[in-house]
Amino acid sequence: MIAKTIFAEEQDEPPDSGAASAAPSFPCPDQTTDFRHRFFPEATLTDWNNWKWQIRHRIDRCEQLERMFSLTDSERNAFQFQNATLPLAITPYYASLIDPDNPSHPIRRAMIPVASELLVSPGEAPDPLGEDSHSPVKGLIHRYPDRVLFLVTDFCSSYCRYCTRSRMVGKRSKGGKQQRQTAIDYIAGHPEVRDVLISGGDPLTLSNQQLDWLLSRLRAIKHVELIRIGTKVPMVLPQRITPALVRVLKRYHPLWISIHCMHPEELTPESRRACTMLADAGIPLGSQTVLLSGINDSVETMKRLMQHLLTIRVKPYYLYQCDPIIGSSHFRTSVAKGLEIYRGLRGHTSGYAVPTYVIDAPGGGGKIPLLPETVIGRENNDLLLKNYEDRVFRYPDLFGSTCSEAVPCE
Ligand SMILES: *Cc1c(COP(=O)(O)O)cnc(C)c1O
Image (cartoon, rainbow, N blue to C red; front, top):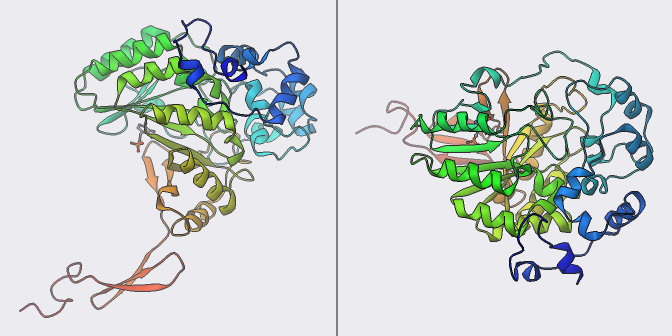
C-alpha cells in the first residue's frame, strides 16, 4: 500500500500497468518524515513523492528558511543584500536533509547563502571558464574537437551556491524550444560532434515530453554517437526518477548520465533508489563532485562518498577544483588539499572509486587533470617510481631512454 503511493506515477502520465507495484519499497528516513509533518502538514505522502509537488513547494524565501532553520547572522545578512545573480531554491525533500541547528552542515552550506557570497576575491569572475566566448550559438559550448556542451534549460530544482553557471541559471530566460532547435541545427551541421553532453540548469527538470523531443532529435543525427546528461536531480529531487521517465531515457541508448553529488549524506534511500532505477535501465552512471572547503575536503568524507557511490553503481568520474566564480572564496580549497585527498584515495581503495581530479582552466582551457608526482627520477635505465605508500620502486625502462644512455646498442 505504502509502496504503491511512493511510486505513484506523475499525475499527467497514464500509469503503466504493474510498473508501480514492481518497484522495491524503501523506508522513509524519520528526519524527512518529521520535516514533512512539521512544515508541510497538508501534504500527503503521494504529494511529497510527486516531483512536481516538490518543485511547486520549493523553499525560496527567507521567511521560510527562518521558520525551518535557526539562521545565523551571516545567513540572514546574505538575504538583506540579496545576491543579484543566483536565486535561492531548495526542494522540500533536499531541505529535509539539512541539520536545522548546525550552520556548518554540508548540505546547508551548499544551499543556504551566507554573507561571504557578497565578497569578491582576486581572480574571481562571473564566467571564469570563458564559456560565453566558446559559444557558437546560444546555449551551446563547443570547446573540444568532438563534443559539445548543450545547455537545455537554466532551471534547477535546487541551486548550489558554488554553481559554476551561477551567472546564468535561474533567470527563467525564455530561450525554450526555439533556442534548443538552433543548437540542434548546429550539431546537425557539424559532423565532427560525436558526443553531446546535455546540461543546464538541470535537464531532468524538463518534462518527459520535452526530453523525448530533445533526445529523439539528437538521436536522429547520424554522427551523434553518444548522448550524456549531467544532472543533480537524483540527489536533490529523486522523486523525478519515475518509471515513465526511465522508459523515455532508455529509448535513446547509448545514453550516459553524470550525477552531481558532493557528500555521503546525500545518499539516502530515496537517492539510492533513483540511481538504482537508472542503472537498471542500462544507463552507465558517473559522478561529478566539486571539492568544497569544510564540506567534503577530507580524505575520510571523500572516500566514504566514492565508496558509497560504487555500491549504487555510480562510477566516480570527476573531482573538480572549485571554479573561482564571484563570491566563492568560502568554498574554495588549495590545490594541495585536492592532491592530498587524491593521494588518500589512490591505492588505498578500489581504483574504480578514484575520480580524475581536474581544474577546469580559467579562460577556457578545458579540464586539466592534476596528479601527484609518481615518477621521481631516473637512474641509468631505471625509472624511479613512488607507490601509494611513498615507497620507491624501479622499472627497467630500456626503451624510454635514448640509445646512448641505454645499454650498449650492438
Ligand atoms: C566538461 C566539458 C565537456 C565534457 O568533457 P569530458 O572530459 O569529455 O567529460 C565538454 N564540453 C565542455 C565545455 C565541458 O566543460
